[in-house]
Image (tube, rainbow, N blue to C red):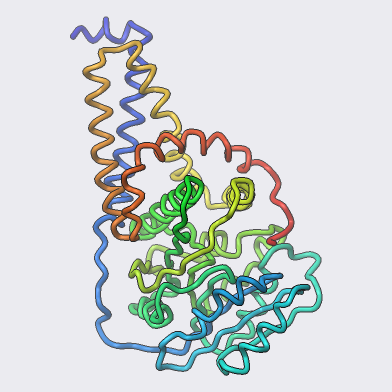
Length: 377
């Protein structure tokens, strides 16, 4: 092939761009996501147990408390622990449900908030109150619409603090239901987890999810809690981890017994609002995290438009070869990650979800510049 002639044809640059995008994607799958795909759960070197404070914040969550709170209260954990429920100015039946639970479960501590923190929107104020109330050094966070997947959630999560770790990132899959919306929500949750868990294993932790997250009170107070972003409605999980996590102080837990199952949104608009709230805080991430996440999202977005354009203007055999190389690597790594996170039923839809991500990035691109809403419920 005559290189000068090749470069002289402007249409060939479309194929060059496609190859660059494919190579960047391959790099992410081989360098980052393979770390989760081939991660092995190691048994702890020695049995260790330490007191744990489970913290749950709730605002008008009576139905969820009735359905899901028992999962946190019936944990099998031999060492001292407590479950702190911060009832944030609820006007429903939450108070009476909690009082009934407290008669049976003495480890349940109820903190009633009767006044809003006007200058601190979101969940950060009730969560801060819960952490300050906690008796023990290790705090384990989840939400009122979540239920631990097993009675060993507390024990298995606290085991990950071995070796001087201060933060443990867990996984919180969405409950499996019928319908395409449920699969889309579960795929997006899996895809997000694949990123933050893999980046953490690569020594670049950038976020966690408050539905299943644990850290020590000392690191919370060392970073002055959420004071750096008190003006934002979100960030109590991802922005705090973005600032406090280092390559040495974070562990991940993908033992299925440590999962917390989350109730998914029931409508597309409800889910969309949840995701917009998350993405409106992601622009406050550290620069290196924004670059790495942005490059991955941008190349994912460009892949299929450049694929189509390359088929139109270049030799289809070369285009197809590049497509299959990237796709085979991607599907192998994704399948291994799905197996690790017990999401293998999503595997047959991987290609459709990959196409869906093009529309996904279009839908949520505006959230990166839009001002976040000042509520958490």
